Image (cartoon, rainbow, N blue to C red; front, side, top):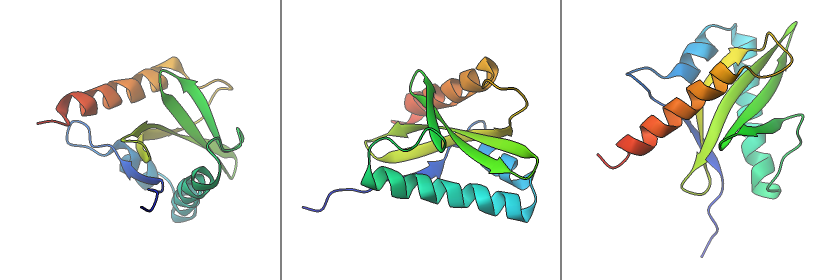
Length: 121
């Protein structure tokens, strides 16, 4: 039996896909770079279970961040894992501080918990 490989999707929450809102707020090159980094994350996870901390970092409570350097700014895209090898991106934002704000991590947890409660409906 062939082993399942990693893939990703975007969370829908309150009728919105926050990740798409983040991508739409950027120019085409920045949006394309973030999508390329998402693909890079999937490729790396299919090879090794823990990608470089320059690419991805564990934050807390099952939430990770994908770090994407853009011209003059840094994008953070928060995600979690479901059903083994499915990555769900909750939302993204432009980093303005050295540390990921707790409010952004809390938002990702809220979206994850909402999806888990509603997955069986």
